[in-house]
Image (cartoon, rainbow, N blue to C red; front, top):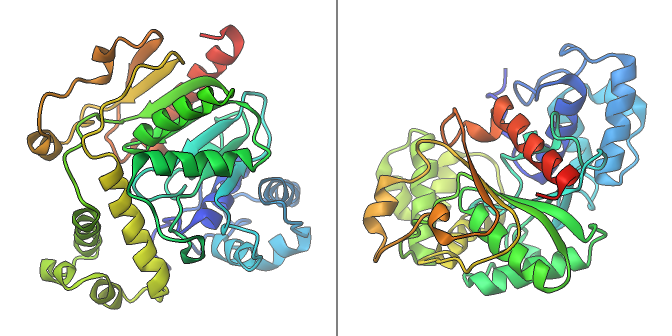
Length: 341
């Protein structure tokens, strides 16, 4: 048995979203068998069609039978150069509601957010990938304005409808807020901005400090000695022994550092689109609060003209896989779609 399922990239997130939509829950592990998990011939046909709708790649039904496992299906899709390498990713192509755009958090991509592409979210769901995850795209920027301008360029080159909801998890909420302001200034209609446990405590952080923080996280998760992180990205990758290409690994770590540097000392300007904050009890990290210089107000203190806040009965890391939270997010978007507020 392979380790418990954690999606590795945008391709995994895309497949997991459709798998969840068809079977009602994501795969338990990379080697989970579609048919052993409740898949039938009809559901296999639906999965093939859903994957084609999300990826733009024709998936023969016979391939689902041959590949069977999540890892097999995902690896086959990954073999197509168009899948997962783009900056604009589709997690679900269909649904009744106004489309939802997922803005990346510190990871720089849609990894971790695949549940928003499955039930109960009833709308097209797309996501952005930060520059730098694919080394061929060039290095990431640590300037917030440049990051937002880059996302605008990606969106305006896509076929994304000009009316949409935006959502950002954790620090991704800050990127989403600024992207919503930029898009609105270019004539896009922002149905809502959904903040998924986004804090306004943003202590000063350089790219290098952010990279070291990411390496320490990876080392701690792997149960390795803490001193390994201080030897740099190459040493950490060697110890992790994942087989990942160093350029890709270094890119991920640099993107994390660039996001942290970009939001350092952030203070939002007033916006007039609907803002909805879904907040857990552990939203604000005490370490970030202690390191933040100067007074910082919270979202409710900004005087936003259309703001509501919802308590989430899960912790920070659980909420993006927490079914009641997903249902609440969809209900809020559906209400706004119907009433406009």
